[in-house]
Image (cartoon, rainbow, N blue to C red; front, side, top):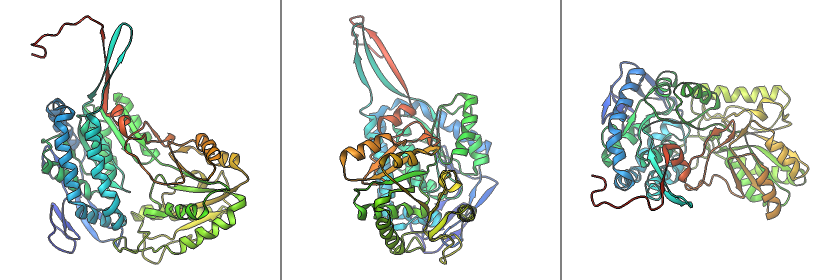
Length: 501
C-alpha cells in the first residue's frame, strides 16, 4: 500500500483511489485471485468510476473456506499468547496506514474524511489489539464440592464474516479482531457498495505475519458470494451485520447446517428527552443523529420529548441543523456527506414522500440537496402516526421524527412501541427518573446523557428484530469459541513429568 498519484485510475486488478493503490481481486490463501466476472464500484461523492471488482461465487467461496480450514489447526495451536504478537502488529500497521485507509473509505462510501482519520480507523486498530489482549484473560476455574470445573474457550473453526457498507473497515475489524484472537480462521465477505478497504485490510494482515489462509477475502454480490458462504457446510460460525430481511435469509441457510449465527441488525431507536434535561446538550446530540447522512443503525431517529420543553428544544435543534454543511465529505467543514448509492437514495426519498402523503408534516428538509444526486437534506417530521411506516421502519437516511409526550411513562410507552430494540438515547438530570426510564427501555444499549460511546469490554447487540447475540469483551468469545467445561473429580489425578507427550 503506497501513495502513487492524486487521481483515480483503473487497471485490470488494481485501482488507484485518490493516490492509494487498492487491489480489486479476492485474497485467498495468501495471494490475490481473480474472477472472470467483475462488478462496478462508483464513488457516492460524484459518481466517478473507482474500480471493477472481482465478483466471486461458489468456486471462490469453496477455495477460501478450504484455505481457512487447512490453516485452522496451526493457527489454533498457537494459543492466545502465540497469536497476540501477530495481532498486535496487525493493529500497529492499521494505525500506520490510517491516512490511506481513511482516504479510500471516504471516496468509496462517502463518510467524512476527518472522522475516519481521527476516530473510525484508529478504532479499527483498537478492535484488533483489544481482543488480542482480552483473549489472554479467558478461562476460569469453578470449584464445587465434588469436582473442579475448568472452563476453556476453544476455537470453533472457520468463521464467515459479512460486513456492511456504512463503516466497512471498522465494522470488519469488529468481527475480525475477536474471531482471530479466538483462534479461528476467517472468510470475509465485504459489502459490494463499499468493497475497497477490505483489500487494504487483507494486505496489512499479510504484512503483519498472519499465515496464509488465516484471513481470506471473497468479493462479490450478496446473492452470489454471500449466499454461497452462509450455506457452506464447512463454515462453523456466521457473523452478520446488516438488514433484518437479509438476516432472515441467512438464518434459513444456517439452519440447514445448524451453524451458529450472530446478527447485529437494524434499528429504529428512540431518543428520549425528559423535562429536566440539559437542552443544549440534548439539542446538539439530536443533530448528531444526522451523522454519516443518517446511515447509522444506532441513530436515535424517533425524538420523544416531554411537551413542557418541546418548543424550546425544537428551536435549538432547528438552529443547530441549519448550521450543518452538506457536501463533499473530504472537505473539513462538511458535516453531512452523500448517501451511499442511487438505489438507496431513491429508497430514502420514497420514505419521505410517502410520509408526506400520509399526513406527516415536514419541519425542515424533506428532499434532495443541491450538492448532488446522492446528497439529502437533513429532515425532521412531526405529526407522525405511531402506526405509520416512518415511525416503524428504518429509513437509514438523515430523516428524524418529532414526538411529544406528557411524562416519563408515556415516553417509555412510545419508545417501546416498536419491533426493533437496538439502542436508545436518554437525556435527563434526575438520577432516579433516568434510571427508571433506562431500565424500562427495550434496547441492547441505552446511552444516558451521551451518545455513541462504545466500550469494547461491554456487551453490544440488539433486542427484538435488531439482532441475535451480543458482541464485545467476553461476549464475542462466547460466540466465536466452543466454550468447554472440564470437570475433574478432586484428588483423582497425579502429576506426571511426561504429561502432554
